[in-house]
Amino acid sequence: MGPVILLSKKINFLFAKIKAKVVILTFTVLVIYPDNPIAETMKILILNGPNLNLLGRREKSIYGSRSFEDYFEELEKDFPDMELSHFQSNTEGILIDKLHEVGFSYKGIVLNAGAYTHTSVAMSDAIKAIDTPVVEVHISNVYAREAFRHKSMLAAYCTGSISGFGLDSYRLALEYFMRFKPKQIGFGTQKA
Image 1 (cartoon, rainbow, N blue to C red):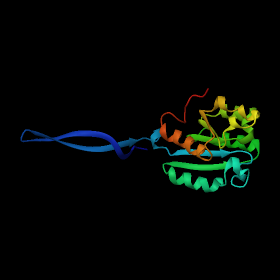
Image 2: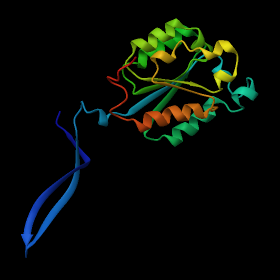
Image 3: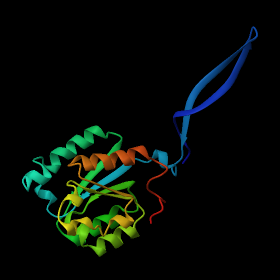
Image 4: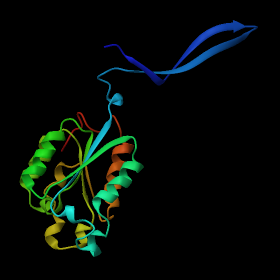
């Protein structure tokens, strides 16, 4: 299949010389080949672990009173250039299956593994095994809570960790992916 012509790479053509003036016709073209990562949609998965299905109803003093579904609608409006999806499970194996499913084709994963953050070697191994960069997020400041929450089994294989900004921890992770698109994320990003 031949290239698709769109807008963007400047090409200047000398059109004609008229009375000692050079007239230059300028137009913009972007040639997108099927293998060109710029042409791909920035698909990002937000993956939520155990008990996050109860956001808005559970421990409101820590997690707030807003459901994730309401917040996700706001994220979709605020990040129109991204193809966002979200998935939640209380089961470790299902979360690992989802990491495997999207971990070689999506541009990024925003992961709130909940309590599995502190206990799951299997999730850590899954993150290490995939190509897609993962940003670990937490709604609460885990370092202001119980001591067992201070250790992440996942952080060593994640691109970064964000915690303590409420639901906006997710927004900050998406901002990271937007800022570094497309050449520094996904499809070949080196992991630790």
